[in-house]
Length: 203
Image (tube, rainbow, N blue to C red):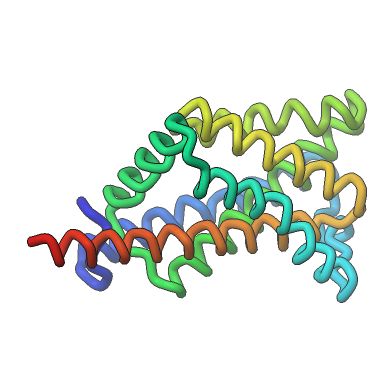
């Protein structure tokens, strides 16, 4: 179903189902943290300076997104078209509020799980290099709509893992991830809107 009309029963059902599935990730993270005796709250270090660092840390992955979205490479053009088709068929329309909720769910949930649990457990047993690389291979695999998308997700995840390790603050990684998703989805929403307007004018 094309993601064009917000507010219909099908649209609402698809969105809330997606959000509910995303909300399971932080629950899983909290359960695993308890099992491995990780105090996630003590890893946050949410202060003004870490919040600002999280905002600044959004710049490199967003620059990566800009390159992908503006490159004229045939492979990246094909990738962008495939991504747009995926979002057209996702089953619900993007609105600013929905984008915010989805970004928060992904940013909080995935960082608590992959950085807050997997990276910490990995560092305890295998050292920091393996702790950053291995969880992000899984992170990329779980985003494998295509080989390029999986690789890009693994690279961004590795970057976030480095940010967490360097800053010592899980809040920095959460804020950077959330803001990146917010920017990427808002860009997608505007492109979809522009495409709908263009399609309507050609009819």
